[in-house]
Amino acid sequence: MVLEHERHVLSCGAPVLTRPLESNDIVVIRALTPMGPLYETDDEAGLSSLMQSVLTRGTERRSASEMQDALADLGSDIDASTGSDLGSVSMRATTATWERTLDLYIETLTAPAFDAREVETEIEQTLGALEAREDQLLARATDLFREVFYGEHPMHKRVLGYSHTVATFDRDRVAACARSFYRPFPPIVVAGGRFDPDILLARLESAFGTTPIVPPQPRPAPVAPGSGKRRLELEREAAYLMHGFPAPNWRDLDYPVARVLDAILGGSMSSRLFIELREKQALGYQVSSIYSDQLDGSFLAGYIVTDPGRADQAARGLAEQFRRVVEEPVEEDEILAARRYLRGSYLIGAETNSAQAMRLGRHEAYSLGQDFGARWLTAIEAVTPEAIQALARRWFDREPTCAYVVPRGAPMF
Image 1 (spheres, rainbow, N blue to C red):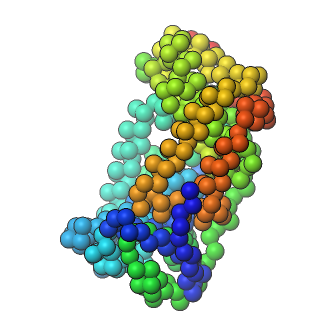
Image 2 (cartoon, helix red, strand yellow):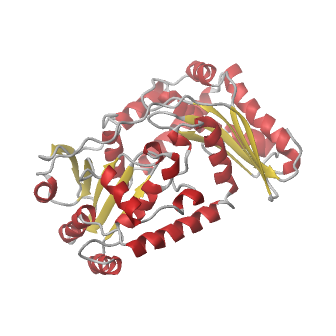
Image 3 (cartoon, rainbow, N blue to C red):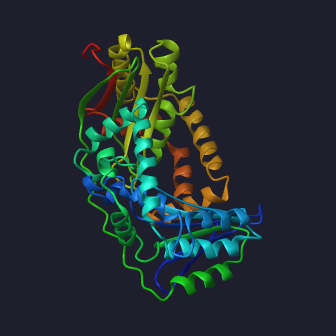
């Protein structure tokens, strides 16, 4: 499925992708720029996320409450977020209000206030979220897995950062972070919905066209994946186990095969991990797979939530399921079910204007080509049991990365 669009370039060098739609009256505009843990030092962990949260809290002309009132009057919203290596600032409005919302959006991007009180408030809220995360044991297991897998590479960090780093931030560091990533404007803009592209381009050209964009920071070198086991003991009653390996990235020829294998292992309640470990052996309450597919540093892991008394058996069960795809071809009907699941998930994932804009922007940001989704969806039709086994032998026939979060005093395994 290729999302039809037009590509324009402002005088400053920023590409603008436009996708006019008549299916609804919603207009979404997203601006994207590289940022996040990949571009942070360990001492800066969480700075990009904090900056993005404060970015939308008022401008040099309007306080945070005044901006919210102005957006509420229009029935619009502006928000910002960041992932491991890409941040987004988006606006959502209606056909009737998108031009007036665009004024507020441009003001947010060009004249953020970074009011010291708003920075302090966001720091407090982030510290609260990090404290709450301590009770999210699957998140703790994932964090532990990433620490082992990525080692000293920047990708090992949480997007939100850590309490000891976030507590050191202040208004000056947040503002400096914004200047380092917005140079002076996000390098990619995507718009979708019922709007006039000529009006949008004229407004963006007027606001940003005369100031050349400084190229984004170079992308750090790809990760050399680590392996081994790490155990974390907490005062909890359940065990959370992860077991995984490096996996194909978006540019790898095996990427479509990996998507099929991930769906076979953990894509649904008819997946292998669910049937074999939960239904047949009753080893866990929750079991599935995670395919962290990225530009580089991808991994495919299985996880299970189990009773501490069966943690050893559950860990061996996860390992056995990965060995199984190395040693035995999968069944054709498993591949057919995986294809249906992937096609449905992909189409559902592009239902909204916002999701479509993000997909266009992500493909542009990573230079994947706007037919990337269509290519891998087509390629999964040719995936065979032999291709899956060859992938498993290439990626899984090595020492795994394992992360175990278990109750304090649980038996060693």
